[in-house]
Image (cartoon, rainbow, N blue to C red; front, side, top):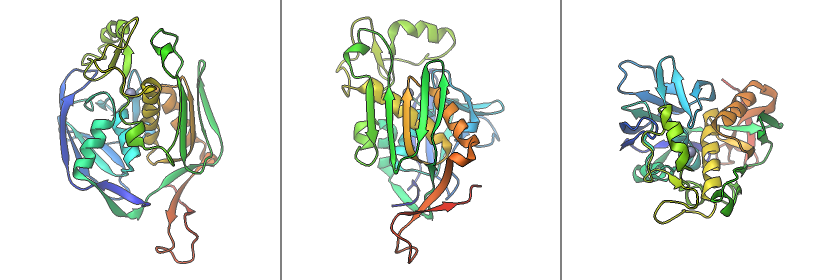
Length: 306
Ligand SMILES: [Zn+2]
């Protein structure tokens, strides 16, 4: 269970970018041990792969973008969230345009896509980032924290005063030990107030947004046929985003995340702050007795950071 994972064989999807509105073809390909997640723009000749790392985040306006020089890849967070949720460590993501397809606005289509080809274990041990001491970052009154915990748990407080938001839960918490990411988190869709759409479109964002890929909210109600997928879908989507943004640390976290109003910018600030504080974390692997005689079960072994 605690070895690195990739997918069994390549798999394709076609969709549109929620911000650009452009059609995009995405291919997920298996990748070698210790190579992590990387993105390749197939429409930009000879462009270097972009590693999915916190340091490569180039923009956090309404979504998380990665970039090296002029080559950008937007809206990576829902795919990254699905990859952590499924325990995929190594993957190449090829894109024919500048944005990961939005699909239905959640992480569920990526989960489905990966499950259609299956996941394989690799030889190398899976590496985790174990939080050793608390790190907190702020932005205005928004706060994001990582603290030590034997596993991974996350809590989020969504702050918005609106007649529709006020009807639904604004606080959610989950622990990966007893919560199914696939069932409880992955299906939560992006959401927004319809009257804020023109503002976003004025800066060339959300050009592909529709009720097919987001929950739309007017002054009084959820506009989508069928309503919400979860009673707490809004706050659950914020957790889904945070999980995706934090997976840009390159490995899953052993620790507790707590977000109050935090969005993509603050999530990235938290990841960067953690990486800078080298005494606040360590990389660990887990080796079972059959693999290393004499070691206790699940005894973490610190590994050197490359
Ligand atoms: Zn999102």
